[in-house]
Structure formats: structure tokens, C-alpha cells
Image 1 (cartoon, rainbow, N blue to C red):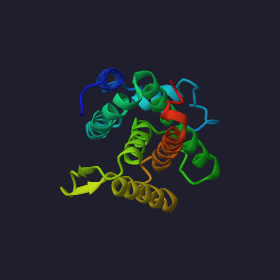
Image 2 (cartoon, rainbow, N blue to C red; image 1 turned 30 degrees about the horizontal axis):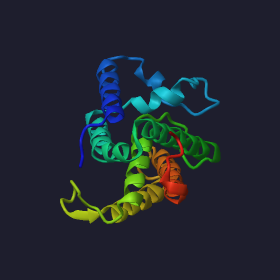
Image 3 (tube, rainbow, N blue to C red; image 1 turned 90 degrees about the vertical axis):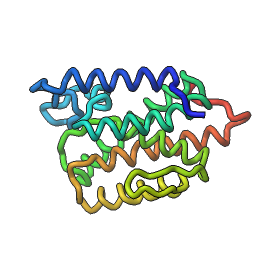
Length: 198
């Protein structure tokens, strides 16, 4: 049953507070993640960027996804392990985005948002509950979790490689999905199903 859990609650609060606090701050972009090697890159951006969002729709979708699926994941794994999982996906998203910058697959523009970490949560949920039906917002039709996440990954991979919709960090999404998927598969295969990060 979906309910507010401790880590998800704290993450929601931090994201909303940061969004509101920086809404009218002219220098807020410095908290986004710039490509390593650029003059504006700072190590702290590796953390601050996934608490930043580009607009109301951006944060609403991410926080809604975190609440819907993250709360269930936290109930299964426990708060400590879920927090480790969320951070793993967030840093994994940054790592794959950095690789895309280095290889020229992505334009060297800064990225921000919790989408990479939330994608990891989506994937983890889809692996654990592949046949759970999710009601999509657009279009409003039910879809099994495994098909929904497969469609999202295919869309991001296609748009990322083609260079379409360059204003979206597609490779960060894919990074969160890859790291989240690997962890969840390893968790399922581990002896007694014990957590690996808690």
C-alpha cells in the first residue's frame, strides 16, 4: 500500500524548498551540473544538480513519480537502503551524462533535476512489479509497469542518440535506469534477498 515514507518525505521537502528558494535567484544555474572540464564546473554540482528543477512541471512530475514508486520501494527495502539506492541512481545518472558529454553524444550544456534518480526508482519498481498496471496521464490508459519503463527507455535512447529534444538530459535518465536496474537485479539474485546498500 502506498504511503508517505521517511526518506521519500525528506526528499520531497528538500526538492520543494530548494525549488522555491532558488526560483528568483539569478545565479541558480551555478547549482546545475556543468560538464567536467568547463570553467563553470564545481564538484558540489554533483550533489546540488539533482535537487534543482527547471520549472513547475519538471518538479511536479519528478516528485509525483518519487512519491508513487519510491514510497513502495522504501517500504520493501527500508529507509537506509532506499536512500543508498536513490543516491546510487542519481550519481549513476551523472556518470552516464558525463560520459555522453565526453564522447560527444550530448551537447555540453548544464543539466539539473531529479529525473535520473527517479528513473532508477521507476526501473526498480518495474523489475519488482512488472505486471502492475499504471494509469498513464497522457494518454489516460493503463499500462503494465514493464511496458511503461521499456517505452520510456526506448524514447530516451532514441532522442538521445538522434540529438532531438536536446534540452532534455536523456543520457542522465538512461544512467539512472541502468544503475537502478543493475542494483535491483542483483538484489533479487542475492542470498535471502538482502539489501546491498543498507
